[in-house]
Structures are given as structure tokens and as C-alpha cells.
Length: 394
Image (cartoon, rainbow, N blue to C red; front, side, top):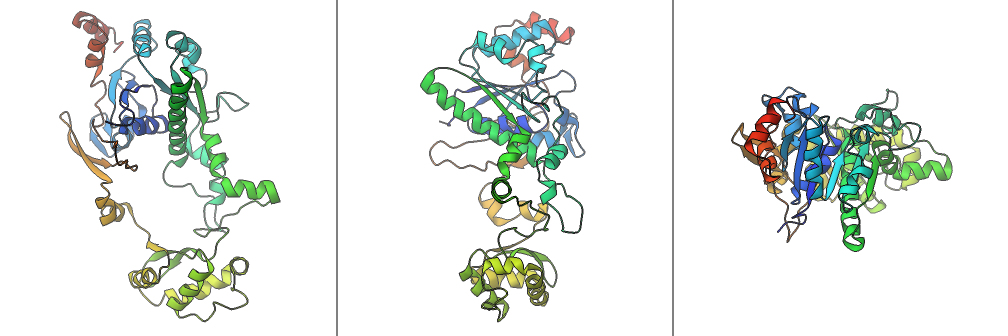
């Protein structure tokens, strides 16, 4: 048994935010049908190189496991009838088009709940379903800027820096998943479905946490401070003899131990005797620390820091991360097989349940791989399916 056994998801999403959400649901047992345009499919199928096979990029493969692909031109009347048949037995419809797109297609929430009043309908967008920005396109770069992340990321004297991974997309997908699961629980109590509206901008405002409350309470605007922490010091990357390492000194006991490891007689120095003073004199303190760390290789310092109980770690490139023994032990790299393109390795499941484990049951699908299977399950005959192929409806 899996947590979401029997939950049926109709997934109209593309790119990253929506597919990440439906993947999380699929990992926990939901049956996900991914609706894709005939011929081209989800745009991210072509985002590469690298590619796994024709029309299957590594980008797409990384976020589309545990789904079946139904190629469907939803602008066509016959295709909309297929959607309506699927809706009757679906628990969730997920989409991330611009606001109003599904309404224009006759597939909006108000139309779909007439068919199935228990339906949970989740829309992910850049800026939300209402408000002055609702029609603005939502791209991760734009939202990292408008969401405050880029003004807070980068070196003090440099320009704003984008976080490497598309975090605004991924956060929206995670929040949407949280919303869907909440709505499923609510439906078990009320018997009713509902509409879920989540946006990338809303998610970034939520992520601002202590930066937001710091501004609202005291008018403080955070600035770029590189890898350092705005409220804790020392807590950042440091240069050693050969590599950079991260060190996080989270309290006063750690500060004293840290000074002992480095052989520094400054634990009680008036300039650095508590966290507030260390923040005030951060630049001076960092120079003192780096003058010591530069004398030994990073791995030697990491051994000494770990022995003393000081949180520290290397700064991995992706190759070192994915070959780390802890990552391998936690089964965070999984191998899956699709007969149409062979074996591939993809990231594993980050949430481990003791009794109702999630699993990777289906590899990332080839475009339209399950179209006939799904249509036959809906009662369509071979002649009808053949006709729809000829008309390019599927």
C-alpha cells in the first residue's frame, strides 16, 4: 500500500513547477496521466542537450517519472470529450497555463466541477489568478528577481546572482503539492472538492520568512553578503589552502570550540565575544579566520572541525554530490528502465515513510506512450483511435 493509492491526477502541466508537483504525488502512489500536445509534447522534452533519446531530454526525465503520457490536442472537440470522460473519475486536475487559458478551452474549474463536484482543481501560475500582474508570464529568472532572492544573493560588491536551480518553479510545485494534499484531507471531511490557486510570487514572499519580518518590524532591507548569514557569524564559506569549505558556528559554545580548533585566542575578545559583536565586526573576523584556514588543506580542517562538533562541510560539484556515500546509502540515485529507451539513472525519493513507502513504479514516458492504453480503458474502439490519430487529435 502507498499513501495516495487510488488517487487519480489529470496533469496538464509543462516545464517544471507543475511536473515537479505531479511527480511528488506520483511518487506516493497517485495515478498520474500527463496530457501532452501531439508531436512536440511538453516543451521541456526538447530542453537540452543532453538527451536520453529523441524527444526525451534529461531535464524532462528528471521530473516526469511515475506518469503515463496521453498525447491529446485539447483544442479539438473530440479531445475535450476525452478530458471530460477522464474528469468523471479524477480526483485532481493540475494545470500551469496562464490564467484564463483553461477557461477559454472550456476546461476551467467552473465547467469541470459540473462534471465532478468532488474534483480538486489546482492552478499554478507566475503571479496568481487575480491581481494586476495575473497575465504576466512566470519564468524562474523573473521571479527570482521580483521575489527578492537575487537582491539577497551574490557578493557585496557584485551584481545580483541567480540561484543555479530553478527554485521558484520547484517551490511552487512543492506548495501546490501541499495544497492538493490539504484539499484531499478536507474533502474526506466535507465531501467537496475545491479550487487551489498558488503562484510563484506568493511562494517567494512566503520563503522570505525572517527577511520579510525584519523589514516589516524594523524596516531592515537585507543586502548581498556572499555565502555569509545575515544573523549569525561566523557562518559562511572560507578559503583554505586548496578548497573552499563551509563552516557554521551556531552558538557561543561552538564559538569557543571553534577558536580552540583554529588556535585563536579571541573567544573572549571584546570585538567577538558574542554573536552581535561578531556580526558588527564580521569583516575583521573573517580575515583573522582565513589567515589561519589558509595554512592547511580543506580536508584536514574538516576532520578537525567534525571531531570538535563544529558543523562544517565541503562544497560539492554535482559529480561529488551524486557519488557521496551518504547519498548512495539513502538511495537518492535510482535506476529505471523504459523498453523504448533503456536504463537511465534519476534522483530518488527524498521522503521515506516507514509503513507506506513511495516508489518509482514508472519510468519517464515517451511522448504518447500510454495514449492507446488510456483510451481503450475509457471504452474507445480501435477504429475510433485510428480515426483520431489520422485527424491528429492524438
